[in-house]
Image: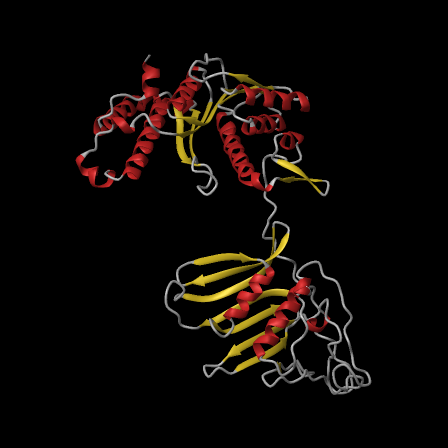
Length: 479
């Protein structure tokens, strides 16, 4: 930008002029950290002379920046191709914290899956505490985001310039750098100062946004269970446990909404069948205690070594209102409960857990079934469905859907408002279906009672349609 506000054209490798009689302030790309002995020329006093020598030649001292400083490379010659100089300015913008975004447009026609790409936007982000470049590929009907390490991202940008996109616009806090390739292959580079040239550098995009979680990672029980460890004196997730932590918090979010709907007040009695290592059991206890609901939580687990491990954690952390018992849901006697939980109980163990919840008068029943084996051998394929269910994978999925639909209808017939939904993304676990039943109250309870004959008729019709002889929860309720 010259003294009259005009852009500077670098298509011939020219220098940046300054108005006569006064010194031009160095632009960001000369103030970036790690830039040494790169002269800033202009006809004004004190700015004459060749780079690296001459009276009054201005050099820029090295500075420090928190991110991307390893990208600094020696500056290309003034006669270097425009794309090389443009890439160097991108590196300097990243190193100096001046990088706003990079927009690549004017796609070159290609065949295949990338034929409908319209443009690419690149932003600097922080990903798991490390700098990264986020690529947002805009297609005609979809967007695709890919994140890259800085060096890999810059290498891809270099490969795309001219070959995949004819135009590139680098936006910084103070300048806009434009690179273009004509249809004849001629490269141009232009730098334009934008309004507010003295503005502060753009902040690093908060890709890792602080997520609100119902559980506190700092609770020492998570360290005792191997979910967290200390990093620089602060509690942090063990990387391999990140998905487990997300599942646990998602479950507690669902429980929170169910507790509100059920109107539970303390003390709240909870049984968690198949508690395993106790992640969920401890999470429920922690959350209920934080809400002042005086938890009385029991984890029931078949494996005695898991029971001993969890009770040792309780003793070590001196927790109250929680314990673990060795036992089997199929032989567990019903005791008064407010919440019954059974996650990943195998096959008919889910039905036994649901029955215990009903017999115990639980206001909330939460179950995530797995291993739907009972109905599949019984199913006779209706003629209209045979073309679809002749495939084993489809038959298995159908058996799962029929099993959980019957369970939901049976729970509704017992006066529970029931939902079946995906409670965690499939990428985290294949056992991602939740059956949530909350005891209806008032008018809702009366409406369900009135519908009971209709619900039982629906159950009978589904069984007839698929040729089913028996379903375990139905048998337990009839006993």
